[in-house]
Amino acid sequence: MRVIVVDDEQLARERLRQLLDDEDGYECVGEAGNGRDAVALCNKLQPDIVLLDIRMPGLGGIETAHHLNGQDHPPAIVFTTAYDEYAIDAFDARAVGYVLKPVRRSKLAAALAQASRLVPGTLQSVASEARMSSARRHVCSRVHGELKLIPLADIFCFRADQKYVTVAHSNGQDLIDDSLKTLAEEFHDEFVRIHRSVLVAVSSISRIEKTSDGKSRIVLRDNSQVDDKELIISRRHLAEVRRRLIGV
Image 1 (cartoon, rainbow, N blue to C red):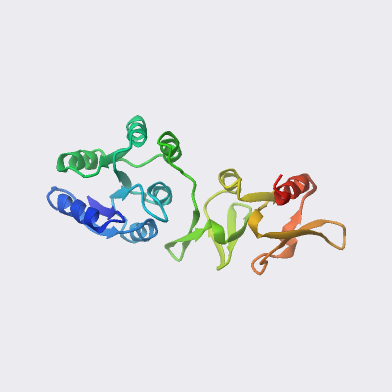
Image 2 (image 1 turned 30 degrees about the vertical axis):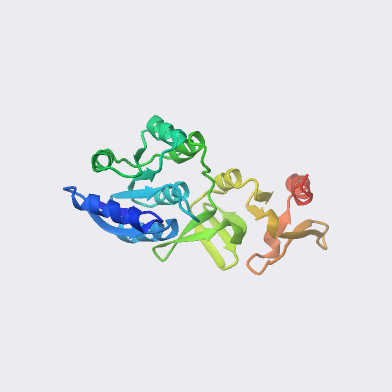
């Protein structure tokens, strides 16, 4: 079984590699010190199992697992964590693999043997029960076979066109696999729907203006990536857009 080790502490990674070297049937094929590198490495190496630290700066373990779970062939995930009663109860309740730090050889062997792939919804449930945030701060796009993480803070809007969703951001535009419906639910606090096919980042809205034919249109602070025609506000959503802009 091919294993990747992910932890922001080098000593922790070295310890896990040493333990894996002593386990028959498991090979450590790579390691990463943060979630972003872990996503890229897993996309390249396609491991069977990922040993994943929960608490890492930047892209934390829960969000990293979410992106790994979206791969064509997602790896099984075993979380590594310092003692936390809420996290442990949540992992036990949802049959999610974990080992406590400092990691013991026998516990790691048992977790590896029982490693299983996470089913949809499990991460959110575990995070909620463990009192950890499951909110993504990135969306993931596949570009030329590589996974690209796009920070939520860089996104102007999401646009749906039939079965595809395009994300317009400060560095261009990319297609993503998420549906507009799930994006609207997940990022409700940051984005507002202006019509059935477009979600706009509230923080990127400069103002609402009237068009020559009397319609209402969003004006973005930086609209270089978005056609003005796509920013017309439907009558159904106008009141909500105005409410969000004034923060009521």
